[in-house]
Image (tube, rainbow, N blue to C red):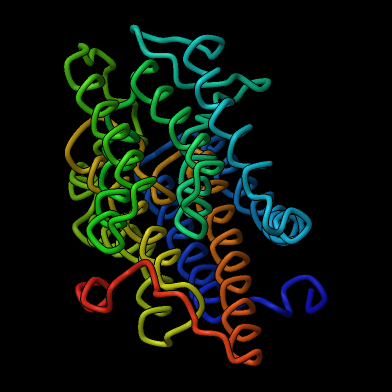
Length: 309
């Protein structure tokens, strides 16, 4: 295990602990709420699989160093393809059926895509974000389109580059298009609306779910305090997962990690792994520039943004 996880950063270590705690809170809730044992098993197995994927994602990104477009563009294309080829329900096409499970690709891939874009906002990585925005509008998915607009809006407020302005405009348009389309999906038991309904199971269970959900942003706070890696990466990571949690509180959308569903569990650890990898790349570039006596480029996020976190 040390060979696999021996090089994780402090924010990543915090994220792994918070993910384990959030999943554990979710398992307690599912058991206390009388959920079928199959749901408990799915969440537990998803967490184990996510731990296995964790080091593989970092390794893949290292092999694609300075070529993030090779991952971001196919990722955006996959999210757009889901709108046309995915499984549909009540007018929404957000899922891919794998055996007995229905996975939501946007929860698995979109936070990772935004983290990668935050590291290197270029025309090449922008292509993946634009494809993903189109996918969120067409699926349609208000929650994930709103998450995109929130994360990219924070990034734009801090660095103001032209690519991020275009990405923010596209995500805002996607959110607006998703909002004007009817939302008829009913709440799924043990998935949607549980941040409030859990209090009916037991008040302490409700508190546990909120604590578990809010802890998902802890790696961003740890990175801000430590001053580790690329601050833009960790801020976008934290903003993305808090926005997903907010959507779950406001509407019938999946509650990440503390509710039933393996997609968010896989997506959280995948984006956590990629965030640490790209932040280490940024740190390595800064150190190399300092050793050569080069002037380091300005950070894309202002310190005031991190202080607000």
